[in-house]
Length: 118
Ligand SMILES: [Zn+2]
Image 1: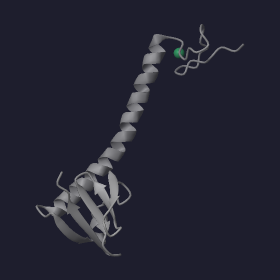
Image 2 (image 1 turned 120 degrees about the vertical axis):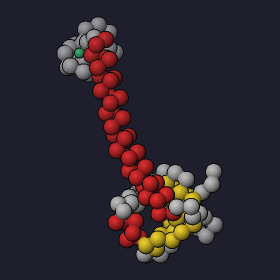
Image 3 (image 1 turned 90 degrees about the vertical axis):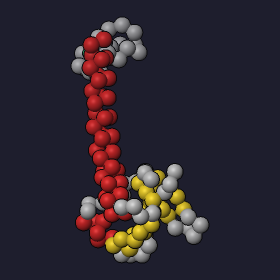
Image 4 (image 1 turned 90 degrees about the horizontal axis):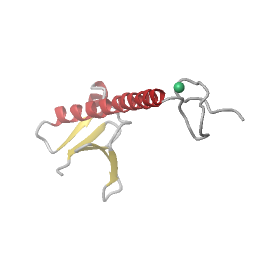
């Protein structure tokens, strides 16, 4: 029967068949690298979401409800495909959440932004 290969270094693992690592060091290194990779993947998306929120909060100022040209948001590098949630209002329009802000397509050119108060 073939021995398992260590998930970190690829060396054969001796002992129980459910063992995944040749040593505690390899296990620790493997888990550390997994965590680091997860962190950087998550950070890329977090950064996009945070930038989306900064763009909205900068445009909105103290306003609770405002309409903007789509072009203005595009020029600011707003990412329409990244959001933190969504909901339908009573008229069946979809609002896309960016944390405490929400936007919806008011028309082809206009984006309505509201600030939600939690
Ligand atoms: Zn190993």
